[in-house]
Amino acid sequence: MLKDKFTDIFVPVDDFCKESGDLIASLRLPGGEKKSRNRKTGLCDSEVIAILLMFHHGHFTNFKHYYLHFVAANCGDLFPGLLSYNRFVELQRRVAIPLMLFLKTRCMGRSRGINFIDSTHIKACHIKREKQNRVFRGFAEKGHGTMGWFFGFKLHLIINDKGELLSYYLTKGNVDDRNTRAITAMTKNIFGYLIGDKGYISKALSELLFNDGIQLLTKVRRNMKGQSMTATEKILLRKRALIECVNDELKNICKLEHTRHRSVDGFLLNLAASLGAYCFFPKKPSLNIEFVEDNQLSLAIA
Image (cartoon, rainbow, N blue to C red; front, side, top):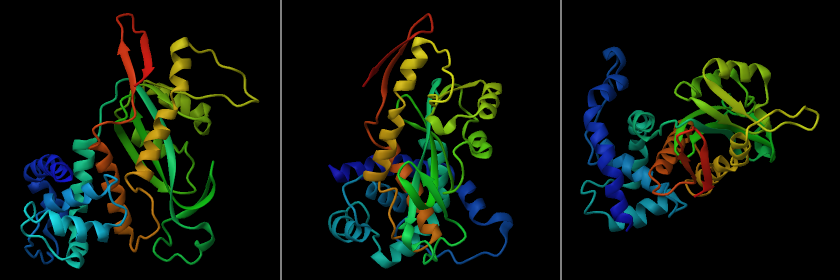
């Protein structure tokens, strides 16, 4: 069963790498400046990406154990040119650009008018060891969320009602959820409702999104006046927990967060592979929504 999933992942990745070969090559060597050694290896880019994505499907927790005792031991027929573990770790940096492009162009879903937004923290290390961390010095920052203080980053996500990723944005841990730059970049292809938690309450943000054809829905705080909503909007607001389920799967199944990173490049590669692996899940948290002729919605949890 696991070997069959390799095929399901490899085929679309390989098609993308073949179609976008010239673009990937131009990004690796911008302007033809300072060519670096490009030694031929036993694994092509699509094979390396498939191995990385398969690790984040939740069957394994340690990448070295996964590579040595599953890939090398059982998948030699799928990867004839398999490399040693140390060489593979060195080689995986080469696929950062094609993996990012594949995630952006082939894995993102399409907005259907009902969208959910949220942010989740990614810890770089324990908060007590923030002063000792050298890998993310100058990159990660101390932030505060519903679970307390943390040192690391924030991953901002927008999903549709089918649980598909629409856009994502990575910021330092001390960046506010209502950051205009992040919201503007994430909502370029979004329309309709955007449902968030109380952390997105902002009159300026609501007006900014409204000018782009997006209606922001949030609950109100105790010291605020209640806002008039239709029955459909009240139901949609109660379904905001959908994106919390997506965050939970990304962290507990796709291994989005761990504190063993030895470089910033490895952290970004792990982030892209986690998001890409989630997009290959056959079943995602979703709502069962039917659009009726009079623009009313019939909702139920799927």
